[in-house]
Image 1 (cartoon, rainbow, N blue to C red):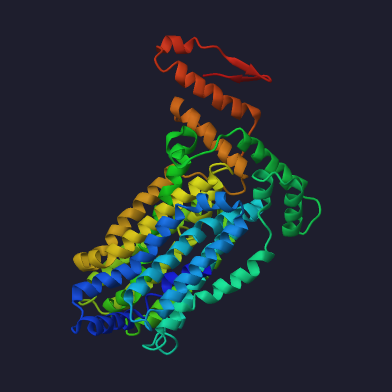
Image 2: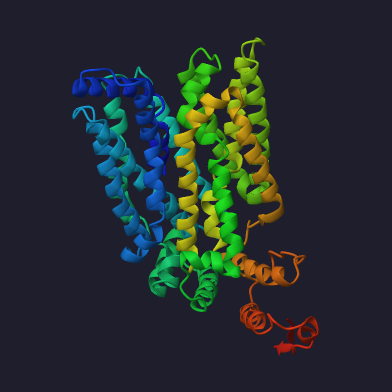
Length: 508
């Protein structure tokens, strides 16, 4: 997660120096300066190719887990991408090759794409229910810490100089080596060991190691319930997530939550923050960028303490609403920059507020929320789809923002304000609260909602209702009912029999 954030932020501060190196390489090859349009395209590609690598690799999370059959081994193998990508970026200046730089960014993006799926899944599976949100937020905290470290080291007085920028980019191999040394000492996911591998003894050992107590029967009982439910599910493919009414609503929610993170405009600020502050008239734009990174970290810590008190849904809406207001204020300040004194400071405060509200909700929540919406069976496929959605939106922002900003000028953030308003409305009406609920309770609730929603859309989502045998039987009865009675008249439907199971009535 730290490397993920580091490679998001590292490309921003040395932008001008790297562009000068691209020009020097072009002159060395062709004997003339690089055309302005070509330089802009090469730089945009250097930024956006990172997202292409993440987009493609995030779709392979499930495939990698099937191949190695281990969460921990999958993360270890993934480190090879980080080592290769970091080495290529660090050697690009010496080899006079901007192609090597771009390819290195692609490979490190592939590493981050896999990490963005593997890490939240692993953390979500080893975390107890009461701490799942807080521990899931640590993934985002590590990301923003990596961004801040990259921004500080990118100062020209440190590693952002003409001679040392390759060291700045290649430094990502250091946490890679550290992780490869420490990860073998981390326990395998007990949930994965019990539900997928059927290794109850090893799962118990892992739970005891993680919780520090010998009695883990309650946690094992929860896993048994989830395993029993998973055994009743067939293997879920990615197309099945969209075809089946049991998974369609949670996968749509997952995708839109990921899009709310990327299409909020926050990565436009991180990728191009220095140039944004320069246009805003800030005297020291690099230090203002570092200030935004510090705000980023501080409010992620705030979210860490609020997530289990206020809930995911409330914090997500609070963050989206605050970002929308800050985007409007930012637009007004940038538009009045030349005519009203002090607008540069208003725009800077609006950017800080924008980043702060992002870390309250849309920053950390989508990463672990997807893992909460699905049981063990469909979870890898769902993480792949959600991750690919996130990285696709990331690529679109990284590739297009510079051109759209040149076209729209100070009004570019109104586009993000409109998108934020849409995501706020969607979250209010369609996203459930998952705080304090087991994976099984959340999945069972969506199953009930998907069946009842087709018959009667005013069903109440009771998140506290535990799953029972009746839930599973009801799903199968509903499938048979829907198939056999799709052509019946309303009178014939009303005359259908009523099933009685353990004293409970199952109608329709």
